[in-house]
Image (cartoon, rainbow over all chains, first blue to last red):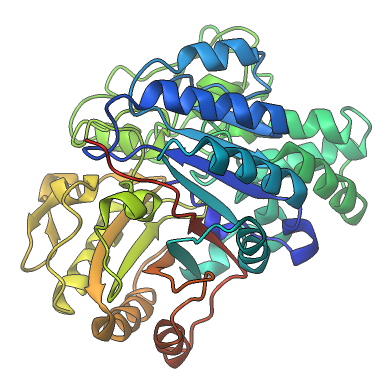
Length: 216
Length: 241
């Protein structure tokens, strides 16, 4: 589970953040799924995800891995794929391609419900189930600030550290890295490959001026 | 995880990578607090130590400490389930499996998320509360299921209680008329734990991605709201095995 339904941020920012999963079902369509999943990944590549990882190769697009390596790793039945798109039109193109391919593997999309509803209606897709986020409960006073969580919740397993986000804001602010390079560094710990570096770069650009830093 | 003191040059590069701030200076060298470390291996994988001083702890796979690795490192395969990840396929393949029917609600409690992690003692508070609310069946393919010592009480295996994990998921399935009681139970137990959890509710939708009003009404009645973004099963799967 990648926690993708709990991604935080304002609606404008979430408009550029859609996660798409390809997910074979154990005992139902596992057997023979590998070539079908590979075909779907080929289609996704043509649309241009901003991040992607197959479970057969836990390295995201910014770890130096080539697209051919990602495709060639998908040889085991049951391989799942996690990907991110940074705009609605790309998501729509991806869904058109996946629907036309009609391979019968489950597809999940995490994003703004109203947008996914509109796209589904346009494409004649009838979604089956929704997984709603009912928020964070308990010692919320112990959480990092909301603006830092906009970065960290892009990694569902919580391995993009809030301390690393603050460090990256400091490095951007002092000119040591660009917003994009900083975002690629932030994406690296996320082994589920759904950290959106494009949105992260936007956030770094937006947040850096708001922070005071120690120049040392 | 551990840092070889004789190799470490004390540059501090690895410190911000630790989600739980377990890496600190001990004198002029960096060291990892073993009580706090979740064994997520993020420091080893992503911090790129310039002198390769970061290494696996020799006891990382000793039971029960191994639970930290299985639940906290997303790339590790869980010994109890044989799959990566802390949960199951749940809503992601329901269009194929039909595990959750139209009148049922799946509830997932995402423990320790975001970022804080949680002790097994606190997780037990949640499993006990769920059991007291009358739900004794945690999803059998979920790794938490294998940690339950007593389904009737929700007690976890006692030898595990000193451990802590970065994230875990408790998955249950209830009838619609039980949802309100479970949500109330979770709101109450949230006051007892020293960390956080997220609540997910998944339901089969009506045509046009219409969320059943009855479900939304139950959520509202408990004073909860839902985020504008959600995870949506697009209904494109089918079984062939």
